[in-house]
Each structure stands twice: as C-alpha cells, then as structure tokens.
View (tube, one colour):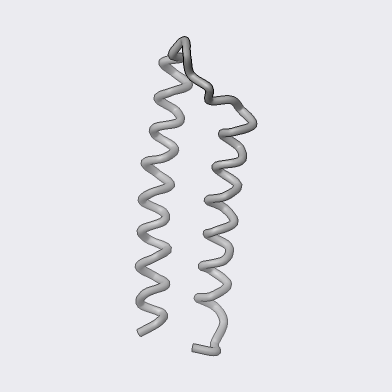
Length: 65
C-alpha cells in the first residue's frame, strides 16, 4: 500500500515538474518587463524538484515498508 502511494507521489510530482518547466519556459520566452525570475531562482526551483524526486525514490527503494 505504501509503495502505491509513493508511485502515485512520484507520478504527481513528475506532472507538476512538467507543468512548472512549461511555465518557466513560457516566462523566459515572453520576457515580461517586471518579471523577477532569474536564472538563479530557476535553478533553485529545479534543484528542489530534484531533491524531492531523490527523496521519493529512496523511500520507494527501501524495503522497510
């Protein structure tokens, strides 16, 4: 049961990551004048997504459940 939840969490996080990437790409293409989105902020948000993916994958591979 816990593995099913973790698979669902990974799939949900992947969908969220795809939409977030599309939003970031759209903002960079449009380049609004008052946008506070920087390259540093973009990489920080992508690193957060990566860290959560790694944590979910570690929980999924551990056999203690």
